[in-house]
Length: 119
Image 1 (cartoon, helix red, strand yellow):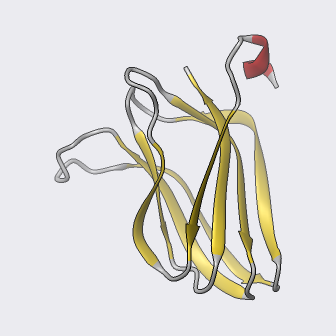
Image 2: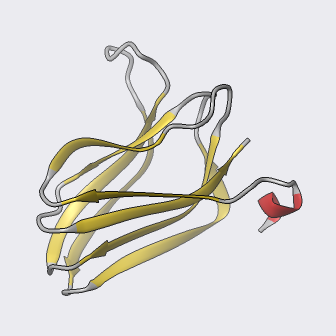
């Protein structure tokens, strides 16, 4: 993990949802910092299917369009299962102070975990 050789401290963030949600904030970086996303893990206690969109929004002005970071479909997850994705090259959020958020349609208890760093 190259980012570790540059003295970036790994940061782990988790959000939980019980039902479909409009927007959850996953990660608000320290002032003047950018997020580098290295891993994504979605797990559930119930068998679910759904979609998710992870996006960055660095503007307080809600009329400014957010930047899509990642979009996916979990067509079927068994009880107490999930999926994970490690990115060989970190996904860097576009701007300083960009907040990482998720919109998800999962029904049932779901945990969304992100690992990365701030630079």
